[in-house]
Image (tube, rainbow, N blue to C red; front, side):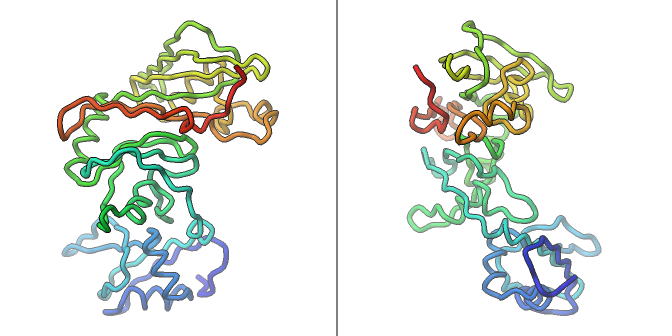
Length: 298
């Protein structure tokens, strides 16, 4: 392992030789400045393997490097300079109920981070940048959107609320509606797609909102009963109407006809749930100017 960092990804696995400050230990092995290391730790690139008696516990992120690391304890530093320097587009706050909040996640922002960093993920962006009344707030994800998908997400601000909202999603008590632009003239009558995904039931209800004959693009609304991975993208593609800009299930040749070539044209448009705080039904719906979808000709 070189001590001179470059633009390549590197994994520094460091065993403490004795009681030493985490910052000093990382600086001596990585060759990076202490200021950069502090920044990268806040962005989630540093992990520590804490030990309980003779057993190792699950590694966890080490955000603050003032900690003294005892002999034999292991630090992992996942150094990806290009990722660590990324600055994601800011999400938009829709509603704040203190114990949970509702946000618009922009395209390109992750729902959760990786071992290399998490500052580009929605929950960590909120922890780092959203401080009502100058108070830091922890954030937990309770559901996910694909990185390329735009739209509404719930964020919990306590473990108790995270558990409550997670159960609501698991029990299909949260109603989600999406909008998408797809290639082709989708049928005027509402359709229900029941193609299993990974051998599990998956149900999507699809309605056409508009059709642009010149571009041969349909504007759809999709309500899902299940939340399988890539469900809407897979269902629409299998039905012969791939989502515009879908790099995985779509038709790149057609996408290249549009200038500029669009990102995935899928937006989480509406989210409804029984509020865990007041037990009232709450629905959050994006306005037309918040959909971030291409505009069709009337």
